[in-house]
Length: 205
Ligand code: NYM
Ligand code: MG
Image (cartoon, rainbow, N blue to C red; front, side, top):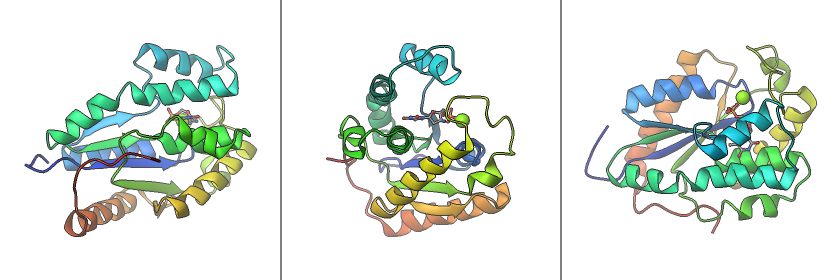
């Protein structure tokens, strides 16, 4: 979808294995959108993050949080330029994952938010929500750092809190992928019809 107005910035969030990546693909096709994802493992910073997630190296909690954030800042211009060209973006995880995962480890929420303050703010955040008890049996859950039931439970509590504060759109992630897709498309169409899509706002500032 390309038009004279700026593109929409849509972010999908949720626990590991909630179906974000599948929906990101489907939405990109439907909206002719640019696909983005964080962490973006293709950059040099992203490859350090990937090694950390795979357990190939240890990095202290503050440093890895800042790397995840820097990995978003290095995409800032791409995001802004893409939207201003009238191209939609669908993004698999964003700063909310940064806050949820790092604060679940015990870092203060305000500290976690601060380094992402000023990034382009999404128009819509879709939160695919399901109990970890059900998600943990999907795919290769457990393959990467953070993919542990008790930890994801804590991550979910932070996501739930943010969902209220930041007006996430919550979708039941235990439905079929077709049902989820239809509900997300309804939300997007509703947004396009009712919201004023003006200049790109800044997150948490
Ligand atoms: N993650 C992701 C963070 O801890 N902080 C962040 O800022 C972001 C974007 O990385 N368990 C975590 C969440 C996931 C892991 O993401 C890898 P994915 O979408 O599974 O590749
Ligand atoms: Mg994952």
